[in-house]
Structure formats: structure tokens, C-alpha cells
Image (cartoon, rainbow over all chains, first blue to last red; front, side, top):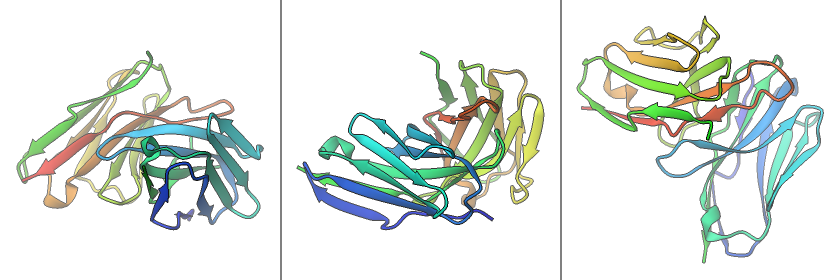
Length: 113
Length: 114
């Protein structure tokens, strides 16, 4: 059974800091990995998707990497801003195109002005 | 803009009173998913439809049912809500095939059970 872990559960950083959010998963037989952002009381916004054959994806100040063999992914946020404050969840899709997503509990990020 | 829409955004019901949550999509995706997310927890898949094929997760309570009358709409029915069913309910869609199978989420419906 796939398990996804995100540690720590919460993180507070000053504005402008570069930071890394970690995600680990137990079964390396994944189809893809997605990083999501969730604002309080809201739905999920997809940030980046990495296919199992890829090593990283970039979008603006965000860079996500994937090391499938070790069961790890990182989300790098450059020059953090107060508007980046949210919960960041990673999720992996099992083998198979329409397989379900297994989520971590997320990391709640607070960027202090 | 193509999107996933959920109605209502907030739903209050009484213990045991049936409730229906709605999801619609303009993405024309084959797959529609329903997730339950409790406070500070990971979203948990309840079931999904691939076209008209219904796929129930093994641990989804019988109290939860779903209908997909056409490609665009999918409904979540909770037959007798209990206090433990209070949660955010998230609908998502995906192509179900192809290279990426990215999932796109709606804004969620926050369910309160009194």
C-alpha cells in the first residue's frame, strides 16, 4: 500500500528566503507525482506535475524534482513571499493511466513579512 | 475558462438528513473523482467514474453513493450523514489516459452536520 509522508507538518520562514519542501513515498512504482497548493478552506490548485520518467519540472519560482528510485520529491520555492503562505500537498499516482492519487497530509507554510 | 465547478460551496445538514453535492466540468475529461478531506488530513478517495464505469474504494462507507448522468456532471449522495461525515468534499477530473493524467480539482464543498 502506497504511503506518502511530508515532514515537517508546518514551516515558518521570513520573506525572501529560498526553501525546500520534502515529500517521500514508499512504493517507487508510480505513474506521476503532483504538487498542489491549498489555501485555507479552499480546493486544490495544481502547481507542477512530474512524470515518472522525468527528473524535474519548473514553473516560475517553483521547481519540483523527483528521485523515483529513492522515493523522494522536493518542491523548491525561490524568494518566498507572504502570498506563498498555504498548505502544499504532494500526491503520487499509481501505475496505470487512471490510477488514483495518494496524498501526503501537506506542509503548512507561513512566510513572514 | 475550462474548469471544475462544485455546488454548493458550503452545505449545512442535520444528522441523518440526506444531502447531495454537485460537481460539473467543462474539461470534457473521462474520469471524475470524489475525495473526502477532514481537517489537517490528506484527501481520501471515495470513488471515481471512468466514463460510466463506477469504481468504489474498498473502505468507502455504504452511506456514500455517486451518480454520473452524463460526461459533465457527477453527484455525491450521502444517505444518512453522521457527525463524522463533516468534511471538505473535493471533486476532481482527469483525462484517464495519455501521458500526464493530471488531476484538476474544484473549489470543494464544506459540509457541516448538525
